[in-house]
Length: 57
Image (cartoon, rainbow, N blue to C red):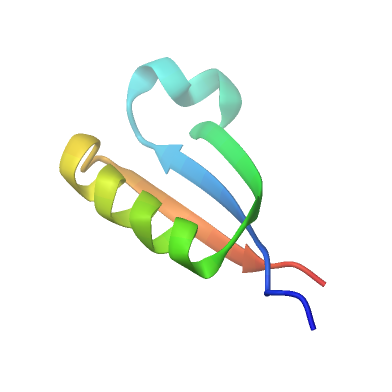
């Protein structure tokens, strides 16, 4: 069986993201390991952002 993949949407309340309804970026086909690494990196580099993680399939 293949590894579970996730889709991640990043959001921010900063005004420059208002036209995109807070959306910063979307990444698809991330593994659990990649998601955890992204969460760690965003917490350090962009603490104003939050991530919505959805399992695919």
